[in-house]
Image (cartoon, rainbow, N blue to C red):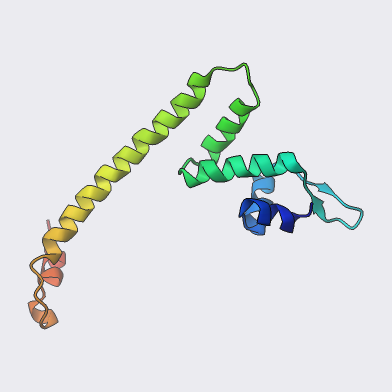
Length: 130
């Protein structure tokens, strides 16, 4: 199949596929005599794996490491778990930061009653130095 078919089969933009090939997370595609990239079912599987990993927020490096582990069926699952747990910890940290950010935004937006900017509580609180 050509790159458009791979894009459609995996829900991936063509530019992303080219980028993944460029950085080596996807193997370089075979080419037709006319120079068009061609792909096989294993490419759909690999790209789908990458897409699922990226959708879960894994970095490209983490996705690459997980792919390497996938290619070692007798390897240790704990290595994959370590990657996933580190990522989960990072997600938990970001959630805590976002929760704190939300609370701070609530504190400056709740007292807002409209009116003119000269009386705006939000502008006043953002203007204060801590």
